[in-house]
Length: 597
Image 1 (tube, rainbow, N blue to C red):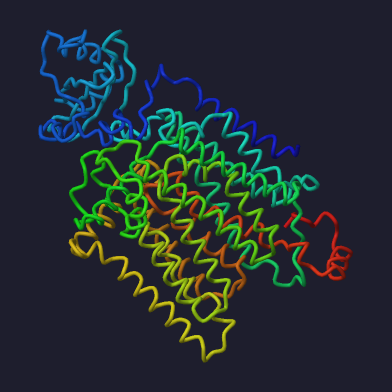
Image 2 (image 1 turned 180 degrees about the vertical axis):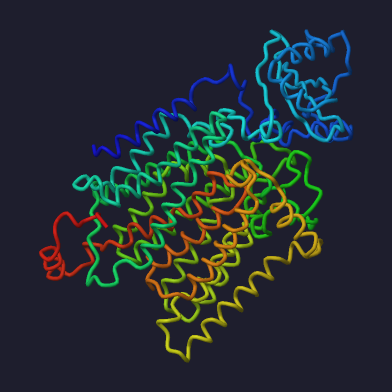
């Protein structure tokens, strides 16, 4: 095995072992999104609940305040004063309270015979420390300060996102399965191998995140993002002087990869049905779909356990309607079968679109290779196991890319419609609208370019307006804007260098640079094939992610399939090359050139 591969796998093994170790002594029991413990602490807004007792009535699983007393509540061994005394002795609590003169504490009952002790600043507006204590033993299970008080997802609860896909026995085999077919063992130091390693290197950051080491996990995201951005920009202009592309040579035959696709799809679906959990993103899709079906306002007044679930575009909620109609919804954050079905459908759709794109580009071998890359890449399974809507974003962008491969008169309108639907799911893909609008115009006669551009714009506007109808039926544009763009732009988050280190000025510069890049790539000369388009779209999405304050690993599937299209699509399909041309091409280039670009 090449040295670089061995190094990465060793690093991943060490980091994931660190994250997968039993951390009960440090962070207590798992609090999975969708579980009672996660829902009671979704925002850790205990101070607000204290000021507003009706919050407890609307969410019976929320922490219940207990007045200071020496008498234990019914069914408990410890009293409120005893748990407050236990928390007061902790050095971390003393140090934090010293920073906030006049701070005070309160005791709260938690499920599973736990206590929560929360300390607030003098005015009660900020929760500064949170301690979780076991009622039976009096043992301190968790201590949280800083942003980890409010952000429970930063606490490293095991399986909170992706459940058992984070386990070493699942994650590492997937890394190997993804790597092996595309590996160039003859040239271990080639860029092709480095590309694969960089894609897998997000695993190291995730490992630190899973162990609540946010100050390590966040910075480790940016080197691979920056590398992939530079790589995609370079690939946009590669191959211009080459008469024929290099051959796509796989270490595993395409029929075997096809069997691997079938096997891994079955594994992914089975794991989703039996093991996965639905995070707030998938829950929000079900809530929104139910509101549309019953002709209720799509934005505002969401349940207390998902208060800001209305922060996405309207098409996200509309997509969940068929699944809610078939599987229903109990009205609670339960297993949410509709969200599971939607996530599985989005995953299968992405696989099918990748196969169709690869088949149109280079033939069935590339189609199978792209489909296999999706099902073997661990972060796509991570998104599927979380039952989020991020795979829907990938599917819509891939559908727009596929539409760009057709020369029919309806192609501009099709990609205009798909581009706006992707943007009305999560708003970042709106940055792709300029490049989808101008793609292929240079290949048309000058007299036909205005008509093609007009078709794109009209379809973009018409389909966008149609998708907005359920939202505008009850909500004003101002309300939608406040609940989506304003909320997301004002939400502080520790999951980026901008939020973690407080760099708003630098964040604005990166955001502006991403906008400039999206506009520039729409007009500057580049490769006009799907390789160039996929590379440009991936670069735009990566640049957009570099500038957002709340970044998460679920966003990797947005750009991953585009990256793979660009990386593998630049190679030819041997079976589609004429035999004489293929033989001449093989004699005219060194054997080591295969997969070394």
